[in-house]
Amino acid sequence: MTERGEPLDEQIVNGMDRARKKYGACRFIAYFQSFTNTYGPVPRLRDLYDRALKHQGMVGLSVGTRPDCVDKEVLKLLASYKEKFLVWLELGLQSAHDTTLLRINRGHDVACFDRAVAEAHERGLSVCAHVILGLPGESREMMMETALHLGGLQVEGVKIHALYVVEGTPLAKAFEREGYRCLEREEYVELLLDFLERLPPAVVVQRLTGDPMPAELVAPPWVREKAKTLNLIAKRFEERDSWQGKSLDIEH
Image 1 (cartoon, one colour):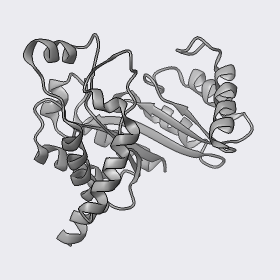
Image 2 (cartoon, one colour):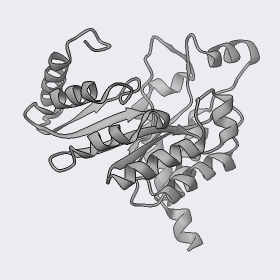
Image 3 (cartoon, helix red, strand yellow):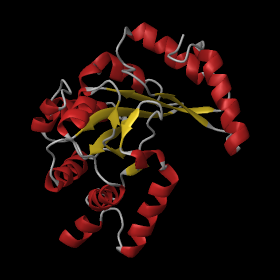
């Protein structure tokens, strides 16, 4: 069973049918997104991945996890699908600063992420890093250093979103009691463009804003308005005459 209460195969088929009707899709990537999708015995993981990939139209596998939950056997398993499928390993970093990772209780350090990326690359796997802008205590310079760090690691992809407050979390308590201030939409867009200007052009940007569950969101309200945020990002790219890797082009 999955987190949505449906058997895995039923959820996959239903999801593919919805995508066909809504987008006219004919090719699909099996995305193991929520929770830590490499945390389990290899035979169990193989069974799950195989069941997802057996459906007609599946061309890829994307697995999201933590860098401290990826060992050599799991990487070997993921690499075994490369001949027939596009394979992405998604790893949560959020920030390239240990002080921040400790503050947000990530449970791993930057070196752990770096090792996981290096070991994935040794297996020929493409890595997508997850990053959050606006984490507590982070300056603009720190966020830009995260972009440069990812470029130095030669990750193949990145997913970015603003920090948002979810009910029932320590951050929600800080927001309510201590007045923690989230980024405004305009602040986020400017930071995002600055970040992208420091990423090598070859890095595939897979996400520019998040999709919080509306019922769980405490703040900021603007993250619900995805289309409006994406339109502002496009507008500011044009107004700033900006592009991915611009700062790297200027420096070199």
